[in-house]
Image (cartoon, rainbow, N blue to C red; front, side, top):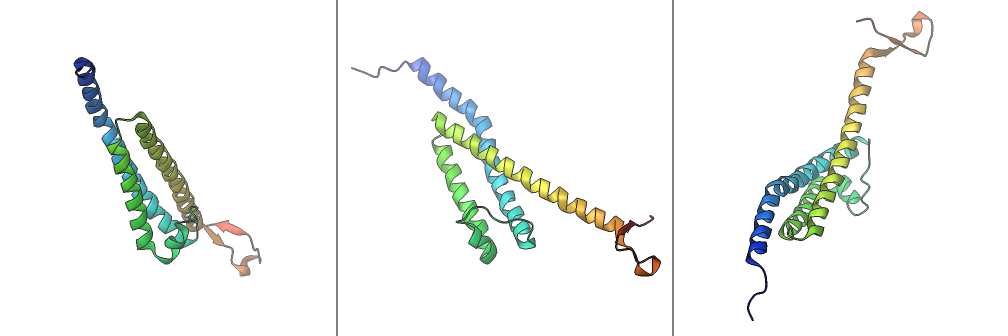
Length: 146
């Protein structure tokens, strides 16, 4: 008895995998780039006291060993991405790749929200100055004329 698989079906499956690779590859690369951005933003926000690392395994590294934090984060996500890429013929691996992309994209949106708040606060502080005590002893803030 020979191979029972239909050659036409196996060729279409290979072609389908190649077609899927064309758009799945950039998604995996996007996960890696988003992970790097997440690591860098996390370092900035934690070092300035604007946020904290929510992963209990990684939080000690952020404060005490930032280079180890970034290295570990890149290595773990890189290895996971490589493993999922190797298993990309399985539908569950493709779903996991998309879930990772969505998770890191959501994390990036949170970082952008913090960045916008920081920039807004900076701009507002440039426009607002404390009222001088000699001009009425007001503790309230007034706007500068520009």
